[in-house]
Each structure stands twice: as C-alpha cells, then as structure tokens.
Image 1 (cartoon, one colour):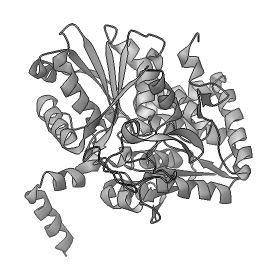
Image 2 (cartoon, rainbow, N blue to C red):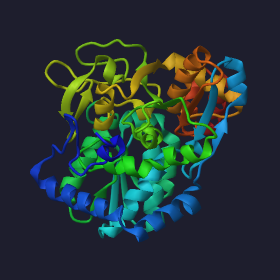
Image 3 (tube, helix red, strand yellow):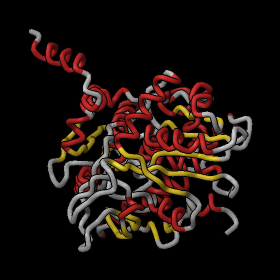
Image 4 (spheres, rainbow, N blue to C red):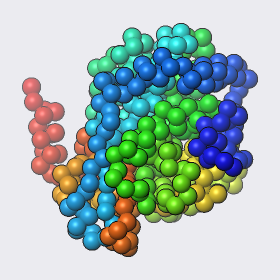
Length: 413
C-alpha cells in the first residue's frame, strides 16, 4: 500500500473488513447524495477556501501546541507537548467537523441539522454552526448524559437548538445515535444528520477524518522536531484520527489510543463497567458500520460506563479497528481513578483544566513519559477543556463547598 493516508479516506468506505454502509434501504439515497457532495467539495477550491476562513476567523485556528515544561520536569522523561483543542470556539475539537459538515449541508440545500451527543461538545458545536448558518437544529442526547452534562444542554438551548433527552436503552450515546437515525428516516429531504465522530455508515468515517485532519497538519508545522509518540483518547475516535492522520505514512512515529477503562475491565452478560472495546469487545455490525463493539454472545450491545460521557460508547470507528489489527496504533485504557488523578496533575502543574475525555490521554502520558529518554518527544491531544465536567468532577472529588453553593443557589428566591 503506497499511502495509508489516502486509503483511510477512500471512496469505497471499507478499511480491511471494517466500515461499510449497513443501513435501511430508504437511507441509501441520502448516504449516496452525501458521499457525492463530500468528494466533490474537497476538490472545490471555493469550498476549501471558505472552510479555511471559518477555521481561522470563526473557530480560532490554529490552536496552540504547548510545551508542558513543568509536567516534563516533574515526570523526568520525554518532552511533553499538548495540542490544546480546548481553545477552539465551543471548547473542543468537535467544531472542526461541524463546520465542514454544515458547509456541506448548505451546499446540498439542507434546511435542518440533527445530531447526537454524549458529552455535549458535539451537540454544542452543531448548535453553534446551525446558528451561524441559519439552520434549524435538533440534538438527541441520552437521558443520563442530558442530566450529567447539563451546562452544555443549557448552552445548546441558548443557541436555538431543541435538545431531546432519549429515554430508551441505556440512555447514553448509542441511544442518541439510534434516535437521530430514526429522525433522518422520517425527514430525508431537508435534514442533514451531522454525525459527531468517525463512526457510522460511509461516508461519515472518511468525511470526519478529513475535516479533523487539520489538527495533525498544524502539529507538523508547529513542532520543532518530529514526534516520537502521539497520544489521544478514543471514544468514537475523531480527535485521535485528527491528530494521527497526517503522520500515518511515517512508520517511525508510534501512536497510542486510550480507551475508557471505567471502573476496571469487569463485565457481566449485559453490562460492562468500562468502554474499552479492544479489551473485551468483538467484531460486529451496529448502527450502520462494521467494527469492534462491546456485545454479548447474542450480538446485543452491552451497557458501558465511563466518567466521561464522550467515551461512554460501545463501538469504535472502523478505521481505528483496521489500524489496530495492522498494529499501526497501540491501544490501552485508563480507569476513572487514573483519569481524575491526571486531571488534578495537569491542572496543578500547567494551569490547564482538561476535559474528562482528554484526561484519559493525559493519564497515559503520565505513565509513559518517565519510561522514555529525555531525547524523546510526546504530543498529546487535549481534545477539550473541562468546563463541561464541573458537576461530575465536584461530585467525584466530594467538594462540599461547591455542593453547598448549588443548594443555596437553588433555594434562593
């Protein structure tokens, strides 16, 4: 294979045995229309010029590549650089593919955006671009995520979006995806489903990889040396693909994806206490694509758990499954306990408060860096900032003062 990069955005939509388009017949024309529009758009100089302008003047790109001098000294090993995607407009990397897909939706003449969201960052970015382009917006969110990510729900609503809590199933991300697909089936003409990661039926994995690759492209320009390691958290996989993509053809660069270890790699027939697909998962076809999923012996999807709503998902993008099988990416996991520790370490050494999702990558770097020589360089993708997690973190850290403040605020007249 001449170029792994070209293969990972191929028009066929398969990556080894993974990927594909397993959808109801009535969705085939919608996916084909989107596929055709996408591959035309990325050859259209005017489309790319407008997208680049939005990245620079609306989202605030390029985001900084920051040398973590204090953390590097504290750990005593490899040099650590942090790609701060949390400084994007809306606070995470999600705005990258939302701007790309919103432009595409306008090109196709769509009047309405729908989306699923877990942590709320994708939903917030979708609501943001909908407001920017004058599109109607509906966001589906599992009821559990709706409750634990309430700040993002509030902001989505201020932007004019309708946020619908999904009460079916485990009330998490996969259930929101199912609800969004049902909406698309009911509203095929004027609606664009702005799916939020590198999962789903073709062309979503290739399309969101393309719109996220700006992250790694910037790193290549910003870093004074070639990186030895790239580290990113992996839910569906959009921020990982964004960081890794531009480096795939250089086999000397090692890549590590960090899944959600939750309460540990424990599970029973129906429920897992984690979301580490490569640890105990198996290959299946779910929600329109083939990849690794946490599923029981009957192929039923298991409930998952993570301190981070954005990684609390039973599947992973098909490109990442392919890359794992060919040993191009090494996958590991971080437990909730280690993620909280990493959150506190990053905050107190560098003055940066990361999202719970991103702190999975931080946890891996804290473990990895001391084992490497000082001549080595690690780049981690801090995919988002931690504002949205305030209620999760204060509860986990048992911050009684904040809880007292909330109680007083609720009872104020």
